[in-house]
Image (tube, rainbow, N blue to C red; front, side):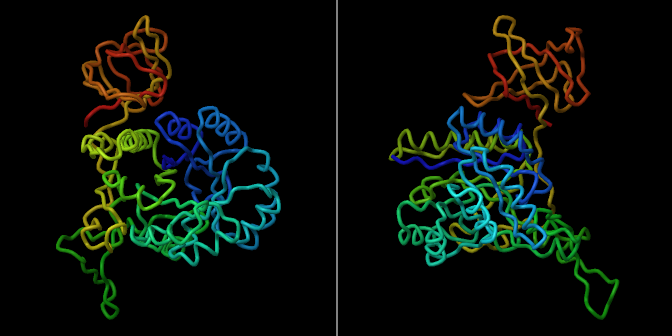
Length: 407
């Protein structure tokens, strides 16, 4: 059986490693230029080299985002940048602009090209056009239904792959092609600098009554009229696979390692359960419960089953739901002493009940009853960011396991 790919965001080198360890089949990341996520950490050339080596050694593919829409002043810097990265063993390049595609082919003729969702690919004729241009994979517009995806799949050659977003933030603008950010803040979303104005508060002003602001809903705090719920298709993996999608993409290059670990593990667990017994597969709500211990918004299935309605918007707040805090990241573990070296990420105190989870198995809960500083001196509290601690664990752990605490 051809297994669908689980594709994870990697906003920086640490996130790449977490995504790999928590079950991604492939990761996508940007360099310091031309990747449409200027606010993400992104990677230097040396970090991309280290990241691809790390991922490849574990059988994970690497996709580099070059999906900026280039302006004239970008062309020469892009040509120089391609010369600098040409020897990094990237498996695929994510591109939206035909000019970038042409320059990429000139500098790296063997490059595997994936069409970015920014290119708004919404029908089978366009799909075949890009296939004829040598594009190996098409990242579908978020606005497509499953029925439309099935038809596109049926009218494409088998060797052309389809990739679709299945989890993460939704954009108010068509496939992320937003002008609001540029208009309101001068930050161009199509060049990687989106200010996320869809998450701002808004009120209504009538043209002939300047200065009189009317709430669009019943309270006096304004309303988030552009604010979509987040996409989540965890419950619908069989439908996505049966529609012919080759790669399931998680949004979130700017999200934390805590978020990436939870989301990737949930989808990995569900996919493994499906492939172990497709005919007998049953969705387990516990997967979503565990996933939602990372910060999240309420969820929607987007356009997959129907046109979104008011039920798919969140009008009261743009805040995340945060019920747990990320308290520590395991750096090493000694099975003899059962002591883990932990890097603190949020305050924790002796007596706290903490939950510990990792790439394998289920999370466990323990009372924090033994904690020292790096030199072995007992401490009652760990308030300092990235403080190195030594904590006794109730069960074996490993590097990159995480500690969390219910708020």
